[in-house]
Length: 295
Ligand code: PSU
Ligand code: MN
Image (tube, rainbow, N blue to C red; front, side):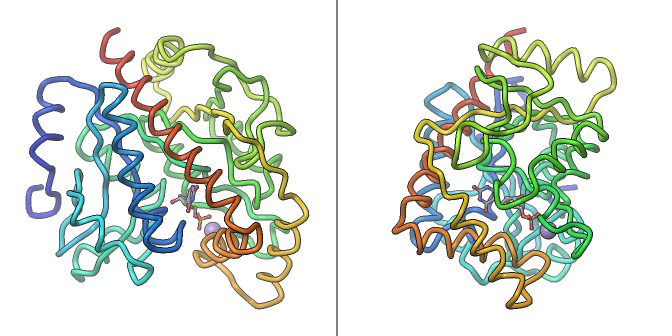
């Protein structure tokens, strides 16, 4: 395993000690924000995890190994040239020695390999609008169905078909917990999403639900936290998704294209809200991890 995975010293010690550890992804560092903002978001997320009393484990592929617990200088290597790694992409990237940024799905697989059960992100991937043309469903969902974890996010990215994604989450048996809300947050916007499957009002309650879900053989639970500042960019999203479609942008390139264009056309507003919600979700994941460690 050591040939394949490098676990940072601090993360290794925390895991051995039963301390709370939170996995963080690198796709948003490399592809979710224009440089140098991605690295700033990554570091701020790590700081939020620490502030809540947990150890951050930022994950990505470097120099032929999956790294769990990237250093600050190493984060700088996650530029737009990095591969975007879903679960299917991890092994080729490791074996070929490329730099690879893990998505939620890729991060969950790596986290599970070393025993980390908590992660924070911005918005989960899901069913793309217009399904089945193209038949694009994020590999995040399949990974959630497979891996034992809690993912704190601001729901599902609203550039997707959110109601269809909520249906698929139900099909896969993934609890969608609203953190102090009754509807699933819509990424940049707090309100207007489908109802959650259960509401929780504090981190300890989320931790108890997770423990029960896992004891019953369940895999991932999604915890939806509303962004503190809500932004309505519905029309802008529709316009940009249609443009991406017309330009023939498909597959893994869609999400980064839409996010980047949104950041540009909203005059940086979506970037700011996206950044703040990612950092807050990292903190929430840490609070739940700390509560779980204390159960
Ligand atoms: N949340 C954000 N920005 C992002 C992502 C999440 O605020 O860029 C990334 C995550 O890595 C997620 C990915 O797994 O978008 C989804 O990509 P796709 O739709 O191609 O599966
Ligand atoms: Mn996709």
